[in-house]
Image 1: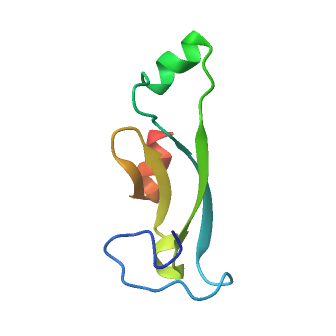
Image 2: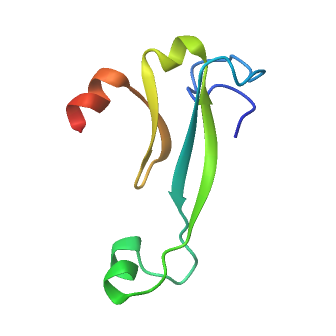
Image 3: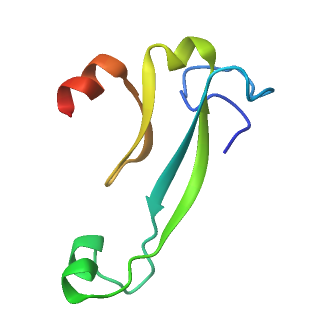
Length: 86
């Protein structure tokens, strides 16, 4: 989704690739009737993911990163907290 900055609090519109930071994230896809991803892996079932692009503007990219969190989806996270969690 490249219409605007991935930070929900930022209204900056995406206009140019030369501004900000682009993220290419693998998003797990949950199909109806399937167990969770960990159970699929354990059973040998194929895990289907989709790749999506997300963008943070110059200002937000200096302070944040974009991550996928199970149960929450895509979220913009402050860099200090992200580095501490790694």
